[in-house]
Length: 204
Image 1 (cartoon, rainbow, N blue to C red):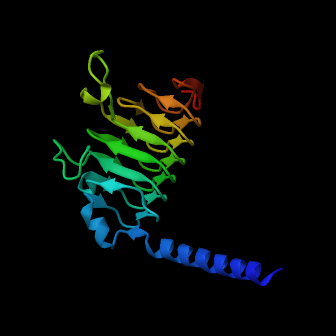
Image 2 (cartoon, rainbow, N blue to C red):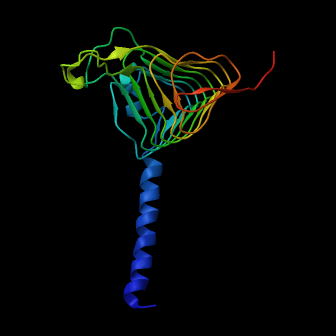
Image 3 (spheres, rainbow, N blue to C red):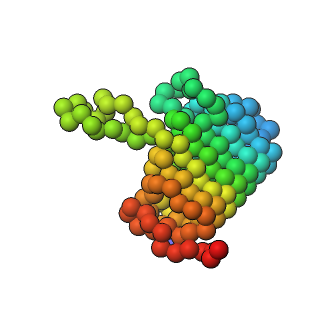
């Protein structure tokens, strides 16, 4: 091994150690100043580093023990400082885990129950674009908002999309890549695009 290659390995290891250390100390916990900018930031909750885009966090309620992974976007409204009709807009229940790269984008009301597992790169929103007027650009048309509910104890697998108006019962499983819209009962497995019930987990 050449001297140059040995130096590269040594330097690479130091850089990785430094990055891991910086990410560790950059975690936002309930005692950090950033936590005070939230509507509520429960004891034991944490937002891992590197953090994704977060704004209007004064309308976001994190329950106790919530764990938010790296690069998660938590946002409310469309612009920084936007006034909301009611608050909190986004509520994440105790002990819920939000996987890396997930987007939770609230405009009206998103409620995620306790003990929910959210996989990587999930997208949850309560607003969608409208396109009723064919003569106007879609970007110039008003959004359509409808509240979202995700029942306690549920699991949303990787790359799931939860669209406005979706209401999932407790202990729901949503298969990877599913696109969910509509209301579903407790104890079901959803899959597909659009998502449909493929299994009832509990016979009443």
